[in-house]
Length: 333
Image (cartoon, rainbow, N blue to C red; front, side):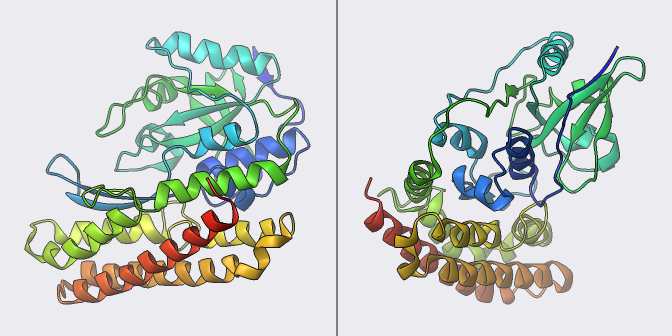
């Protein structure tokens, strides 16, 4: 049997989850841009991850782990990743939803997706399933920058959906993506997303917290000391990639978020006087400067540049704390 959802949509984009969400919104006639989907999902994050179990042993992660759930919840839709420990049953459940004409979000590890040809694991990669072909034994998915639908062999997909590569563990996670009911209007959903985003990034009162601006402060303090770590070149290279490449759209997702803020000004004119978009564009440029310096460290082994990178990250920290402090003033929690 072969099934492709009639009227399927895939709009190539910059980041896996926001691309999938935007495409699904167009399928349902909502027509949300990718930056709007990132913003509704309160998609920015910061986590300074360190430990011998990580490879590399230090990393700067810049996306919220809850983007997908935040997106649906801010629109008034309950969200929970559905799991199944049986790969065959997990695939059957996804195919049953496709049979009903419902696109399905799934989480995967790119290491097992053939067309990525990846030598590294990343098992938080989100794609939208729009069809399948039992004769060819492939699922048909919309994936980030690729045009049209891509084929993933069933056996590869089962491995990709059950990856247990540290620190994430997948159990055939999926979510039926329906946007055909009554949704919260954007005038309601966007302020909710603003509040959530501010909560994720502003200080918690715990100076050891690895996330948000406190996590940035920890990274700033420790970054010059990376020179003493055996894998400092890989740390610098990987952090550069996490900021500027790997589906961020540039500037650690902040460039795309600035586009969201510019779009939000047309929906909530009262925020325009705070110049939030312009300030976030500046933060995005500062993030890019951090990445450029770290890339140079990885290529030249010039560890003295780590002090400079830390100084640029301090600009980011101050900029983001200022922006989201103002957002909380506009939309109090």
